[in-house]
Length: 184
Length: 162
Image (cartoon, rainbow over all chains, first blue to last red; front, side):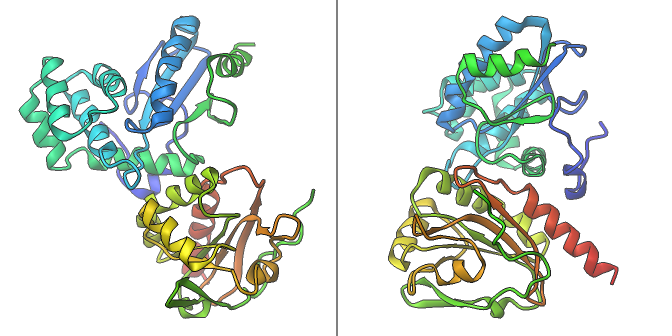
């Protein structure tokens, strides 16, 4: 892994899915790139979660989607550990499964619940909990966060379409229209 | 509408002394020697402001890396700031530009007389008390932090290569 490690590299992490760094769904040659900066405890991100799913279903192989962490920990006490749990799940090969479970269970994101979700997914939950408690994924989460600050994230969720911040409404039709413009 | 009245870069930042809490005063010149990020916002409690201050609250470590101090400022009174700050768990001072109302915002050229609030305006002030960068955001748009971080970085580079 040649993952950037320092503050000064965070500004060079563009708001497009980056192979080998990001958690990505959709083909590499998809004409539309969508990046979400999100917080698992943020209700607006929870509301956007099924919309992103529906957009992926509608656009199929035309869409490439990456999720980056932007936990607002002072407002959302469980957001940081939830983000770290998803990153820890990624190391056991189940990032997206954990990502989905977290958004589907936004009202139960305490450490014990995180460990239970790991068990539900057939992961080594003791390892995951240890990694979360020791903060071993904190640096990665912070790097996502800092790249978001540099890219102009101003709240959660913030979406970027082909590298440009999307400032429109968060409903399906509005985002679909913005994404569809990019296929022309 | 035009926002050309905000004090531009290289102007001297007008000094002020304002309450952050009912019994604490903060003076701009006390921060001489390090950069200050001065964030004017229209009002406590409005959802957009909450988001902007909440965002800055999450990135105090980033400001600290540049040795910078963050100060929020609005026309709300110190009691209002105290309640808002506690509710949002803010870890930086909010100053009350309350009496005479909006006086500091006027000095910085970012007062909206019709609404009786300040603009949503950002100033990065250097260690000598000069404005290095300023930006006025459309009132309903959270400007985020990328402009501030670029300005602080630029300032740091400028100071390293005099």
